[in-house]
Length: 338
Ligand code: ADP
Ligand code: MG
Image (cartoon, rainbow, N blue to C red):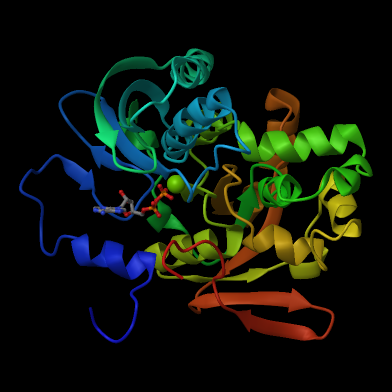
């Protein structure tokens, strides 16, 4: 090892190919939510894989096997949604500690199945092994989209507005709730508590929104928010060669998060919402003159409240708009090695 620990994204860069691909049909490799393969015909094949590690992504004490199964499937489906695609098939690889009980496995299977059913995905294969100490679960999901509708991270342009497909920070607040004593949790309105816990334990990937956006042909770039808005908008901007100015304090904050903040979850909910991870809402950009039509269309046709929250600018980096002027921010969020 060198003297400095590499971050997650520096490690990924080590694996990134240089030069071209062996096959002409690869449109996108490492660096987006899915790889995009333009095989024969009108449609592109989308492929994504995500790994969940016990003790890192989940604790046996705070997530049910059903929820774990749901989440493992959902986070992969969310990457298909992030390209504007339709999820089709899944493969599940599991490393299981010796003595894992049947009820756990059945719960895991039922959660995976429920999510797969909900989004029209077929489980077609996988692999099973014993793991020495902690469990691991790695799902691969395949999806497809009409070729010309695939939305990459790299298409954002100055003059675009960046939107979120829904409120952020709820999942991170749900994670905070799981670490709290019962008494504090009891002070939270049950409706808000369920909203926060469900956001963390049973994320709902925005496949319908992703398809709707892709079909309209208006968005210029898209991804899903898994590592926190600041981190992920940073990735989208870097891939597009642009920067962004964020609304900062003016960001709308969900009431469940405001209430959690009052109980000690965080000092500034809007700031917390921008860097909390595992939201699995879509983040996309579109030219500013389409903003009203997109917001109204999503509300009327899908019942989804889009949140315009940033402006794409030519200058690289992220800037926050606040009461005391504009400040540069670092893309803070989840990094497994930081
Ligand atoms: P997401 O959060 O959308 O799943 P990640 O941030 O995990 O995306 O990964 C970013 C990109 O790096 C993706 O294209 C992913 O496939 C790729 N990637 C991550 N780890 C590796 C690895 N060990 N080898 C090759 N590619 C990787
Ligand atoms: Mg993603």
